[in-house]
Image (cartoon, rainbow, N blue to C red; front, side, top):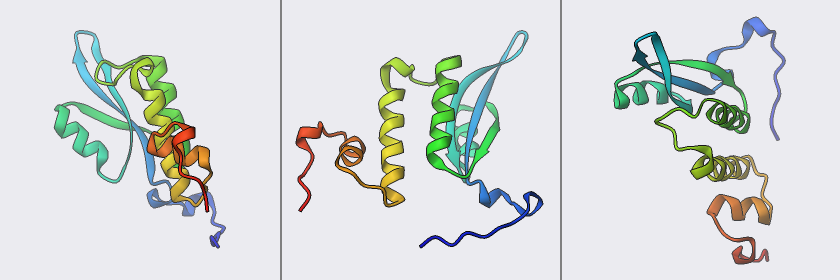
Length: 129
């Protein structure tokens, strides 16, 4: 059973919102443009900034990983940054798969969620015993 603790907004810390959506920016003649949008936790943003050698910042933090994925997907659809795969190519499937895995980690398991997490066609999903 999950224990819930009531705290005021001033008592909340970064660890209460472990997931974030971030943006990597590349220089452009008029300032900066969005090059990549991602979802992360921990040092993910630092790793991506170093990998792509770009500036970046956290856009928004979330308590819930699924909500972070939803917001990331919304921004990718809106801006289609050049370093992201286009939503029509991959993001929809990847987001749904990651969300399914996150739900399974939280203990929410149905044949449909399990099939999505493992990339199975629902007819290939193992039967529950």
